[in-house]
Length: 415
Image 1 (cartoon, one colour):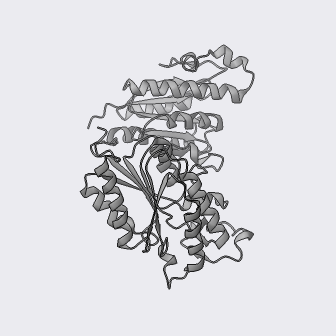
Image 2: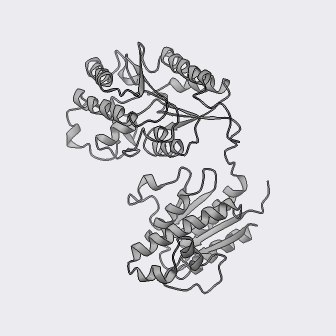
Image 3: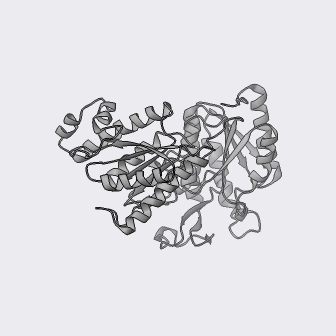
């Protein structure tokens, strides 16, 4: 492992030069190297940077003068965001840096999110922000492995409080660059969605079985951010196939929960032409935030408090039909082989016969809605088992094996 790693530092050197140079000094003192990119608009940097604001503007096919002439700070920063993202990606492809750190307030964070989003999984990407973890940051703009550090007490000028944050960030990005393992791509990857084993257990059977077939398996926690990362990577074509067996996030979204992967859930693989096996894992429930008051619309619903973070609300029959319609609507857009596996005896551990959340009539109505609305491009397979039964996993593997035999699933690695 070599310590000679180069970190690209991005920020507005006209207003944040002291803070940015402090980060650079911390990295140098720890044995790293730095490259600096200035994304200022109006002011001039008092120190030279390897990549100037003029270089950034040029990468956006414009000039600083034209950006200033736009007369609007939002438009100006969006143009600088476009330019810096393009330039950062170009520099990465030239192997000129090993990790990136971007510093900013709300304006700089807006730009930082775009910069990090263009870099592939495995490249250390750190955002030091005065608005880190704020609800104003849309989850869909976070790259799958973005790290954020709160820049406390650092809005204007250096001080002991903000130096603590900045030095930690400098050490974090350099340390990550030294030890980060980028995806080896020596085996084709299967993307799978699930919840914890108290609710869904099929991955306990499927993961070792797929690994024995020569595939690597990445299981994503379908609680909002996990689904967003899954969708992003699926759309990028990272996966040879997906086992999207927990689609609860789509129900969360259409029923107004903040625990959502967005309205595009269940479309990434389909748009990218990635074969997908889909099942309605835990679609009988909508997850809401435990610490927030339960919305009046759920007052007459059964609930299950999973922990102090998540409470699950049991959906009524009409609400389940809405989820079934959403699933079939999303899958109707798929451009590759799509199998919808429908377990007839339940879709989550808590809805088994005899369990607290069991509602056979409502689940039967959901299944019937799936049957009626299933689009022509989707092969519907009904399985007389619960989603956590071995029979369900065995049927999923049977479909997958058939696809492999037919050449539908690419068994070659991307190395």
